[in-house]
Image 1 (cartoon, helix red, strand yellow):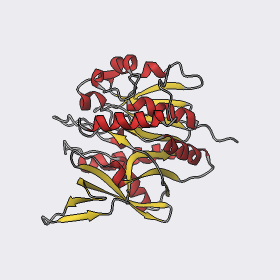
Image 2 (cartoon, rainbow, N blue to C red):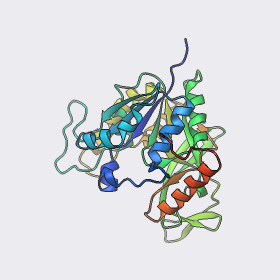
Image 3 (cartoon, one colour):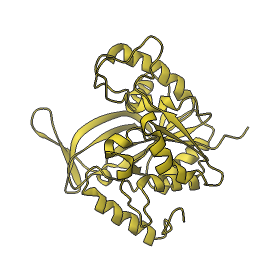
Image 4 (cartoon, rainbow, N blue to C red):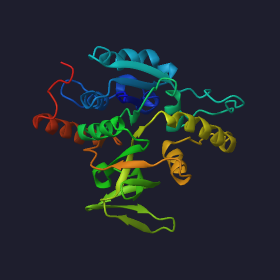
Amino acid sequence: MTTPKPILVVLAAGMGSRYGGLKQIDPVGPAGETLLDYSIFDAVLAGFDEVIFVIRRDIEEAFVEGVGAKYADIDGVSVRYAFQELDDLPDGFHLPTGRQKPWGTAHAVLAAGDLVHGPFAVINADDFYGAHAFKMLSEQLSAPSDDYAMVGFVLRETLSAHGSVTRGLCRTAGNFLAKIVEISNIEPDGNGATYPSGSGGVCRLSGDETVSMNFWGFSETIVSRLEEGLIQFLQQNLEDLNSEYLLPDVVDRLIVDGDVRVRILRGGGPWFGVTYQQDRETVVRNIRELIDGGAYPESLWG
């Protein structure tokens, strides 16, 4: 039996709230391309033949017309939509009064659970991961293996010159993930980085550390595990209006329990993102350099 081509699941349910409306997603390419356009382009070249956008119902029309429609005519690629909603909870659980915050990335992936039918990757809609990252993960997902995977990025290449960031620092055992530790308020410091310690001091990082930027590879076995984990999460956190059911937390638990191995695919990048408005100029310049170097055409879809 041949392994089916991998599916790309794009977490886009937060796009409207983060940007103040879909029309305000900044173009970074010369023909008006967004970071998502470059991700889809790289994914298709790497062998992904289906894209599932996880969005909210209230942005469906604007998203399909303004974002998803441009991918509908790509030869050999199908586009589908899944919906992450606050009240999409297992039987026996009800949406707590006052809950406004989305339930998190693991809940978003679970929203696409009925649509995945083989190995799949998960990405953020507003990050640039690079063609090599998609190629590595596609090859991993196309290989006969029960392992999950995560593309790792070099910490210093994911920092912003305009403020602090939060990153998932990866502890590894050989080529496998042992744990992800989320660290907040990381700032560049020379060739490395610093972040505040709990005692008022400063902790230092070399900058060479591997971090997770939410670029995962799963088999469809993750769906049932996410379903089981969501029930446990809600039993403990339902009334906490700010609690989130997050992919790194789920993966950590599965690793500790010995249920899965997560292979680290090092060498992802270059990574770009617009954490702060001032980052946009750097992203535009980096895209221009990639185009001038032959990595992308002047117009992706033209």
